Length: 203
Picture 1 (tube, helix red, strand yellow):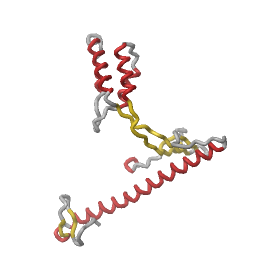
Picture 2 (tube, rainbow, N blue to C red):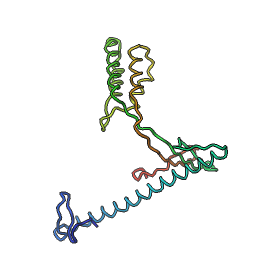
Picture 3 (tube, one colour):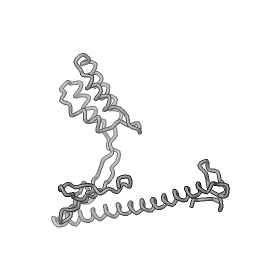
Picture 4 (tube, rainbow, N blue to C red):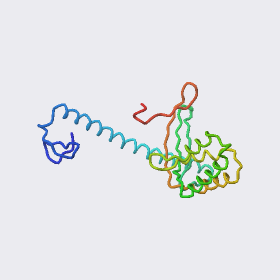
C-alpha cells in the first residue's frame, strides 16, 4: 500500500526504491499495516476538520439568530459562546484564544527586575530569584511564556523600579493572532461537565 513510482518497488527510509521481492515478508506486512492505519487516520482527521468547521459555522448562525430576537446585529468575529441543551446534559463551547508574544521591551523589563534583585540582594529570598528565573525561561520554540511572566504582576511589590518593570511587561505584549476552539461537554453523575475527548490518545 506504499506509494511507489514503479510497480513492484517500495521506497525505503533513505528514499531508495527497493524491489519488493528483496524485502522480508514481515517488513512488507508491517508497511501495509502502518500505511493502512495512517490512511484511515487521515480520513478521520479530514472528517473531524469538516465537523469543526461546520459546527462553528452553525454556532455563528445561531448566535446571529438569537441576537435578532433583540434587533441586534453582531457582525464580525464572534466571542466566546456557551450553549447548553434543554435538559442540561450537554454543552457546546466556542472560544476565541489570542496568541500573544513579547517584543524587545521584555528585555528592558528583565533588566529592571534584575536591578531590583540587586538592590534587595541581602533581603531577597532565593525563592523569589527562582520564581523570576522560571518566569523568563524560554520554551521549545525559543519564546518566553507570556502567562509565566504575567504571573509576576500578581506579586504585591511597590518598589518604583519593580513597578516600572511591570509597566514594561504590559507594554511589550503584542497579539499576533487568534485561534478558535470548539469543545463539547457531557454532565456526569455529580453534575460536573466533562469534556468529550476527540483526541485519540485520550479515548
